[in-house]
Length: 256
Image 1: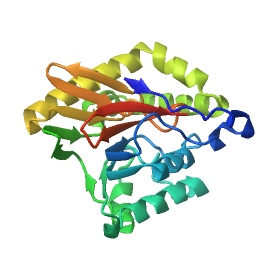
Image 2: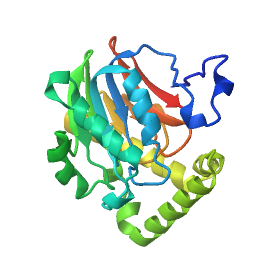
Image 3: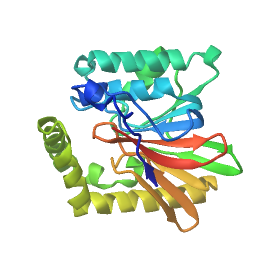
Image 4: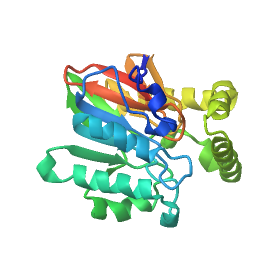
């Protein structure tokens, strides 16, 4: 189920910019794992600043960047906040911190991951498997199960550009959320990625729980006997992230 952080009563009107409102959440700050995906650094709608604010308030043993950390190969598009996010990841991955930072490559990360893994000190994986709380987990971005992007490259590029324009022109992101809710193509894509990812995780890795990104649509469902969760994205408001608590509880959460 989605859980929504609240804004502290009495402080709501102290901030004219929604991005500057303090982050509050309805779960413990101490966590085993945090999973985020589809940050799209370099995109004008990336919420890298808000993500830093959230992560700085949490204490976790593992941080998984589940694909599409970057929007493309053009580093000139990175904003000051984007560079601050990369600096935060670099510091977090310092071995003295005792935090596992894992980067699972996405379709937008091609070519970037290999370069920055050395600079940031973060290992890059096509798939990442780990165990805990009696469960076997798999994190995979999900584009591997989306044939549309390989069979319709031009159409995909145009659709992605239109979607980013919609996000840019609508600062409250109502239009982009409406597109995702009503687009049958988008919903079918999400269903297919979830179904195929869950079956892949079960067959290849004997995973009980599978985490994906890619579709920008947060999900928490059962596919046969595999729990499938999608961590949404950090280009929409609200943005989503997944937590695994110290007790093993898993949840998809929202951050405005």
